[in-house]
Length: 413
Image (cartoon, rainbow, N blue to C red; front, side, top):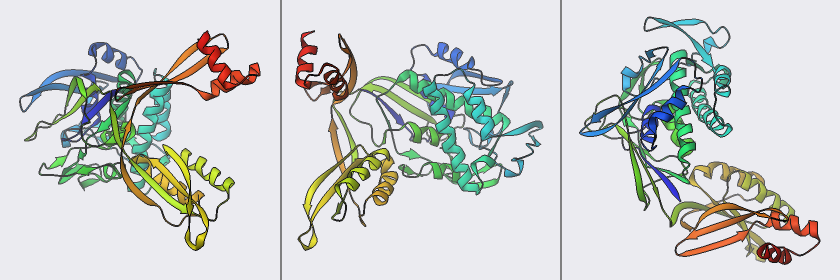
């Protein structure tokens, strides 16, 4: 399986993630040409090689109508967003650094994104990342998402960074994205609202349930955009897995620290997969089979990897049911809420587990009876293949034969 590991020991920002992932592509200039032709108003993205603490990497710069966002000078990454809800209805003009710009709301942002020349998958990712940022700003400032507004130049800068990362993820197509614990920095940072603690409140909100840490480096190392991109694309957070690295990308920030200010991205392969999951379990003795079946469906909808039941003896000699749920750590809160909502339990246990899995992919087989999908699984010295049940059942119903006969017909074709 293709693995992307992102080292955030110096935090993360949109431009740094763009640069790190860009270095993983064989034809970087072609990608930049594609990015600059997407139709982001006034935006020009360019790259240059730079050196931090003796390490050479890529620095990505975004200009809007030839102007680079001035707020970047404050902390070396990207600007915070201005979200003064007083602009919600009149969209009045404001002065910034000697230039006149107006502020865009989420509706305008969504309109810009929906008109970009990108695939539906990338568009969905971009909107999801922007929604994480807007929701965080809404929560921090106590205003509805519809009243969150973004400074014009900063808006285009952020759209370019977010779109670039989403497009790069589509091209790299990793099977897993593992992110290190995120270094957020320490101290305070100046923004449009004044001086704020690090991590900035919006960044801290986005990074809930994500392993983060501070340290001796004073400054903002992880920005809201960087946090939202990591939160959206990470399949897990933790140490680098065992992998055969094929390419390494260095995405540089603009500011200099005692340590190299960069994000590192490692792209490689691993045939033997392992990860950590949570096993949540609870016992019930007052639910019908229909109620348990309905609850299992809802828990799956909440993000569970697996839900299964085991007969259990309960207190007072009552027959009951043990409900076991497997989920990823980032889905724990929604899964726990669903378990409490749809079952009668008053307590849920949690165990952290190591999981070893085979690499899986779906292939299609063309047969005289129509397309049949097949699940291929490899790893740990074994290889397995199994037809998808739904496709076998469809053919069996159409032909009036058993599933075993369908498998024999497909094998004889």
